[in-house]
Amino acid sequence: MQSFIKSFLKSINKSFSKSFSKSFIFALITLVGLSAHAWVSTAPVEKEFSFKFQMKNEKYEYSQKAGSYEEAFEKAAQSCYRHFKGGRQISEDRGLDIIDVCANPRTI
Image 1 (tube, rainbow, N blue to C red):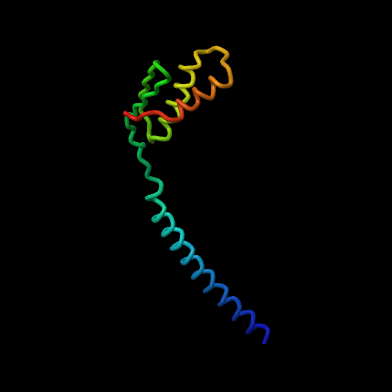
Image 2 (cartoon, one colour; image 1 turned 90 degrees about the vertical axis):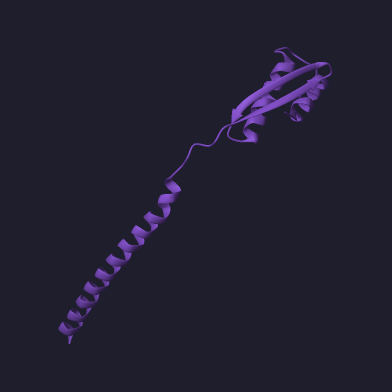
C-alpha cells in the first residue's frame, strides 16, 4: 500500500510541476508582453510659456520652455520674486506684495 501511495504521489508531483512550469512560463511571457508598452517612453513635448508680471509701474516678462504649465509657472514665479526683490532685504509687507504679484501672472 505504501509503495502505491508513493508512486501515486510521485506521478501527481511530476504532472503538477510540469503543469505549474508551463503555467508559470505562460504567465511570465504574458506579463512581459503586456508591460512592454509601459516601458516605451517618449520625451515630453516642451512648449514655450510666457508670463507677464506687473508691480506698480514696473513690468517683468518671463518665457520658459517646459513640459507642463505648472513647471513653467513655478520657475516663472521664482524668477519674478528674485527680480522684484532685487537681492536686498525687504519689509514683510513688500515681500507679501511681491508674492501676490508673482503668484498671479498674466499668461501671454
